[in-house]
Length: 274
Image (cartoon, rainbow, N blue to C red; front, side, top):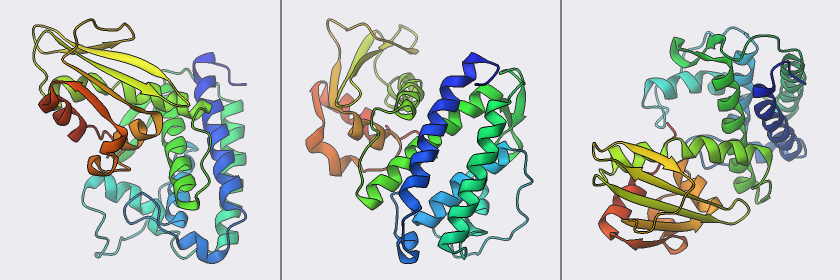
């Protein structure tokens, strides 16, 4: 148990997901580590390298000194370059090297979480030299690791854990972005409401309300006259929000009632991950 209850939910979610990742990749043959994942340009090995690398950074390990190749087509932005460093430096590691480092990183990180004494508001190192609170960083790791667990499950055709502790953290994390998606990106009209009705392993209904000044808020109360009601399943919701699928490939799994132009504007701008 961590000292601070506000961190425990995220620690438990991370533990559940990273353990699942270890169980998924440990039996893989060497060639299977090269299979492509839903993350552009990343193999199974690359995705696991990313998980290892970011948890090593949470442990305070120094970032690798490494020069990236110039021909990585999927690396276009500074944040992508930042993430790629931990990946590219492990690209020639063997399967036993990968599983051993993953296991060792899980042991170290689990011990850190169990013995955590810092206040959740403590500032810690974030990407590109930024700072964020310990609580935010721990929550983001739980979110990130669960999404990558699902990436691996897609690649290996082993579905599961769609309602796990990590799934709950991911749902809450994605919902915080909905007001921005609806109000700012999709320019929903003032004094309107957009309802999201999600079914499946995780069922929830949320309403984004736009006030007279164009600002968006979100709550769990239904709206009597929404401009749009978007209905879909949880897997489609998170994969679209995390940029894992294109809208054109999942239109048959989404139902939109009301203003169709607004619905399309929202769905076309739904991805929130870098």
